Image (cartoon, rainbow, N blue to C red; front, side):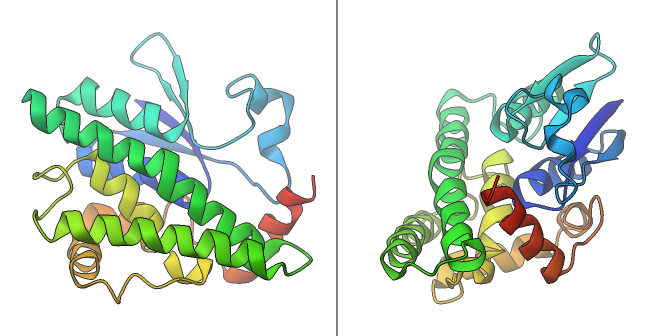
Length: 219
């Protein structure tokens, strides 16, 4: 059994989609970001960085893991699924996962800050992060013009990147202009695990998302 501490964000959805795709039993532990539950002592004991997601693997001596990329690697390796055992494909999976955690996620996150949440609109900052996120979309599109999935077969790399790319409109950017990226996003939307995972813990309306973002950046 996995305990999943999460919220309705792209990084949180990475893990709920993955758990659904793997078919692992898990218990949802919602973390209310608006109320600052991620900054409480009990949560900081799990993740000193005060961020979701976090898992506790009850079947492995209550092992605690934070950081979405680390969690994804752990679960894929634990089950032997969604990461190839073949060395080249395995490395491709890891590099496109790192592309997400070092590029797509942070750049789109900064888009959200300056485009949606920051009290002062700073055009140079908005343009900077939107252009960089869009450039990264073009990299994904180029890759997906050659392969169906980022590492040839469906993998944790697809889940990680998809959970962010699908939210592009919230960052004020558009993935649909990229033919191959758009095809990939739409195809993954058809998978039951992806549909279910993005509704966990529960959908948050846009006003709550905006308010949460504003509260977080002012702390």
